[in-house]
Amino acid sequence: MKSEEIEKVNLADKFNLIKDHWNPRIVGELNGQQVKIAKFLGPFEWHHHEHEDEFFLVVKGQFELHLRDKVLTLNPGEFTIVPRGVEHKPVANEEAEVLMFEPASTVNTGNLQHSERTRTNLEKL
Image (cartoon, rainbow, N blue to C red; front, side):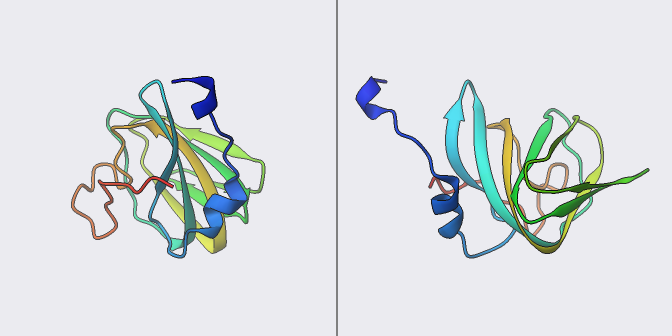
């Protein structure tokens, strides 16, 4: 890649392109990892990822990350990392804008490969 091909990414502009929920989009890629963004609203599904850790950073809004033994509330500027194999369920009581960083192989529904919310061919913004 040449330096003239390097551009900045404005997250607010990218989030403005998203009109749905729980449908991650790719906004960057590096070293086999993807930077993804999504809007969360309502409950997701309990799931885990066998081989990948997941990084969640709240850009705007708030969401709860339900774990089997506790609930983490994440506010703007806060992040958490869910280690591989740990069952979790994101829940957003109001719309949240979330950035995720994870291996390109990560499927959003983890072990629930055939859920109606499973997204495998992610759009690049």
